[in-house]
Image (cartoon, rainbow, N blue to C red; front, side, top):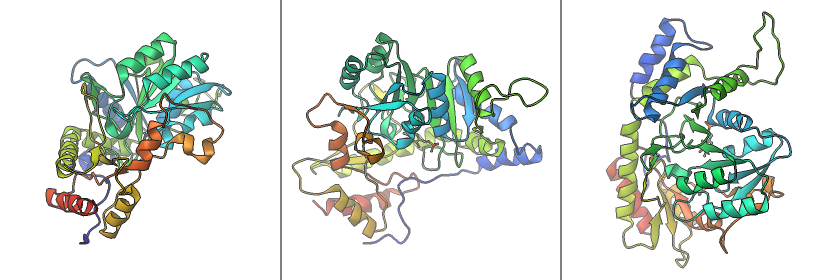
Length: 378
Ligand SMILES: *Cc1c(COP(=O)(O)O)cnc(C)c1O
């Protein structure tokens, strides 16, 4: 069978309310650069992260999640020549800003319980590079990492934690929102994320002065003087007021999106019962946002995930390989990689895994046809 309309991995889902906030920006002639929507988006996100209670989080709306990571790296004090410990299995945007500052990534392997940074490997890394002061961790596909262990290790070594929750907005660990564990956290509103502003990101910190400093850098580092006075290098990283309007409208539907993603995950899980296949795992004390559902095929099964991807492609269904680990990337061939395992977890997951269509507009019928195609290969 072949779907007439392509079944995508994950695309934006708009609801109409976004337009109301955008229209308001037009009506008030607040198109650019900043204004009401940006301020509101930041305070609404801050409220959301605090679960509606009084929030201690300061948010800064930016042009991209990557921009937020860059500013977080700067806030963490990363300097040229420094070593920074980074998640290995993730999107390159997690780790590229370390290079922007002239520092060097040492990649830390994943564990197999959540696919995120392995605390054991992180400890080994601190033994090898005791001077390291910054850790950049990503939560893969919306499944929270082992944050108790990771934050303990960071504290023990006096290291600052930058938490990349680009894929994990609305995921919780011990009831606490991802993005709020790090000294600096970030989320993304890129087009395929759980909610989107068409593009954008946010920096999250409990440190008001840090937020102010990031705002200063994000707006060209203008000193307060009557003329254009510059004592530091700045960036043009701020989110536009129109984009923030889309984000505000989407935020109203975040929980609904999370719920739909969760249903998709469990439909796959049930559909694959009896096959030599597992879903991307998560920790018992965590509640993922199930941004992307992924399958891993058992090592001893001869079905290749790339063959599954090809078969799905023939049926007009989009799937995608797992992020190729950073230590396997040509651009990082001279960077060190630390693992606590005989065979790196990231390599196992990359070789045996596949991201499946997780678009919340996919119907249950469409999904069951996707599952049938996959099943027919075993
Ligand atoms: C999407 C993503 C980013 C980058 O966010 P942008 O808003 O696209 O710049 C960073 N890290 C991870 C893990 C991501 O998935």
